[in-house]
Length: 380
Ligand SMILES: *Cc1c(COP(=O)(O)O)cnc(C)c1O
Image 1 (cartoon, rainbow, N blue to C red):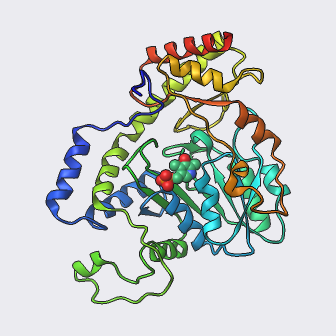
Image 2 (image 1 turned 45 degrees about the vertical axis):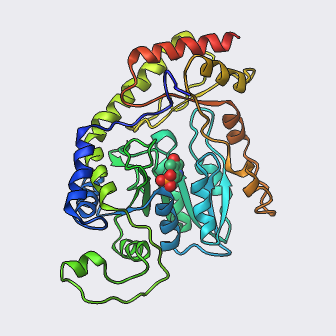
Image 3 (image 1 turned 30 degrees about the vertical axis):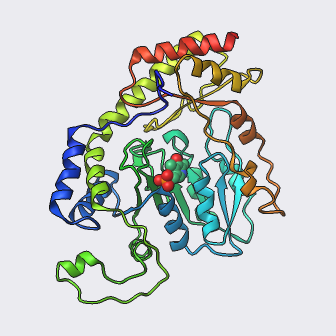
């Protein structure tokens, strides 16, 4: 189906094409100069010590869980209102995800109070997700982490370029995980990044990213090393040079693109408040500078969401749902029989949420058209 207005769109131009060609011509395809440069620029942008490029955001989360030592018998607290990869990464290690509720119908992020209620003597860590690029209450979550000595992983897949209290998202916890999947604020097709300020953690992550090997092909190519040892059960979660060079170009455009997303978000909110006041607008008065990854709204409880989305579709507007909560999936039902999660705030938000189109090249006039169609859809 050809949408008049798709849910998201990429911002690629001649610079991206040239970057790919340059790598093809260089004849060095993986873990080379472009990857090193991408990592350097990314850590400089986030003002953190280490950035490690990986194959995708899920690999970043998996490596974070491994490097922090999660394993069978351990519990890790995580929101249910997120993409399934956030919780899957915990299960890959044998540990058990314990789902916490979100804060409110206005703040769809994990609730610090709900985190604290779920801490047991088996809890080993917390994964937070900055929904839509809007920061979790990191001061409170960090103080809970300090109090119970629990490391915090940030799933910052939505928050590439988000800032909170003058600090970039992804750099608040022990480690931050990013995704460069095609619908994210910057993309390499598939791709991801891990960031940390902890030297030991960075060394562990680096080992696990590449088979647990002590030296890389690149170092041997450069004459820095002759052989290698394998000191851990690692993975191949590397990024290639083609994607790294796309990432470098996309990182350069991120600031401008995120500003456009914020402007469009403000426009949506102004129009919605004026002409569809019964619509809930999460994060309306959120502090911090959001990367404005997606535009969530909450329908009035009486509105049939399926019919509403069908109406938008009939007008050529693609919408989506973020997210069907993880604890309701078949692969998660009865997964942890002792913990039947009660997540009333998550369940209400998840049943009312609709995600509207948002991408940097979306026109202001398109936003007006979408809001007109929202009004019409509500009246049906
Ligand atoms: C996209 C996304 C991921 C997974 O990233 P991939 O690069 O697709 O593996 C994880 N968590 C959240 C919140 C995401 O949006």
